[in-house]
Image (cartoon, rainbow over all chains, first blue to last red; front, side, top):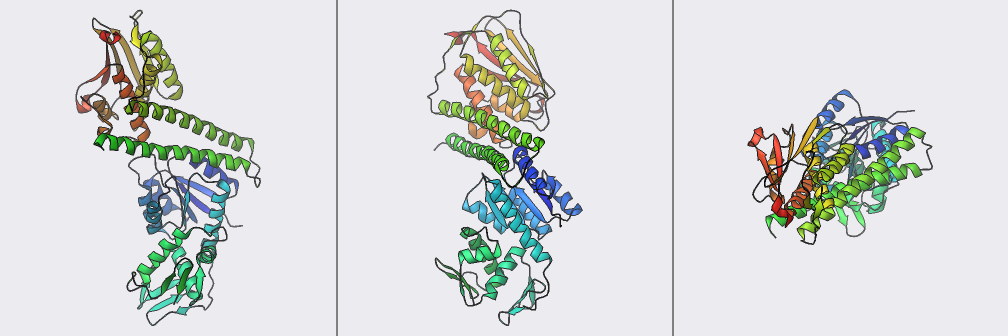
Length: 232
Length: 233
């Protein structure tokens, strides 16, 4: 059985203790990083499958969002952000900087653990992806290679996070169809998801910035108001 | 809205986020204990219970301080001055803070006899506790010893706090401004500590107590509260 390596980042002892106990109790290996320096050391030394970042640091000098970016620059492994801040802007910023999921505190442990399982399931699928010969040529310019998880635009490779790739891949495999928000969320994030429309707004926006000539007038990922998205 | 009002509201917002963190710890611990999928051993159960206990204490303390701070801000806090023993108030404050900060030794030196002071026992003790907690906890490292001395002279009493204040010099300086307000509190200090400092200051000012420090900037080694006899009136 695979033992997942998790790095838990934060400086609030009570919540760290509880999250760690829950993860270790279910067989996950958990390391703790108290600040950005610890994160740098841990990422160098370990091969983590999941990062859980408590965004709200008690130490004034530490910026959780900067640490989110720091992790994303070092690895493509999923990042789950935990935060007491429920503002849309903070969520969007966290996603922009590489977070894959955002759990607002207070949360039930059951819900949190379901999200951990989803993130690891996606990551495992990504890691063990076998050649499927499902490469999709969208146009002369855009090429999605599902075998290697590479996307090129006019011959230039575009760097996508695993979640961005899964989203693009899912949309492109359903080219021409209108897909509901819920269907996309469940296919890309997992069965536990369905109401997190803001996730789609942010990730679709990120994809548009990466693959569309003019993100304000997209030609590939179209919004179907109140329903979902359509890839053309 | 004045700069001070804005700073107070920002502080309340920061503190509310801290409260959310405590609620999150409680909810996470309780939902862990209630989870039917896992049987926790005794040590784990104790850890969750301890988390809940600590978080509830933290919430209770913080909301009590916030309530007083907001009542002072809205000028709805009434203090009731009665003759009280400063020795008694200081001793109780020392006991209370010592329990919470076992890593610091609080040394209290009291005169054998001192006049009674016209003070609100509960709010003056609260101010002293908050002040001690701020001095002990605001720095980067744990303060080893905090010495407190009560002296009486011809005009009133002096309570002097001495210790390694290297981590809290700015904060001590703030206490001694002519008119310190929330907007001037050092931004590098954590919100909970800023709230405690603000509340301690407000309560001391309601008792007409002045604060002075010896030395400037990096040389600050003591903070003294002057309690005038005329405050009895």
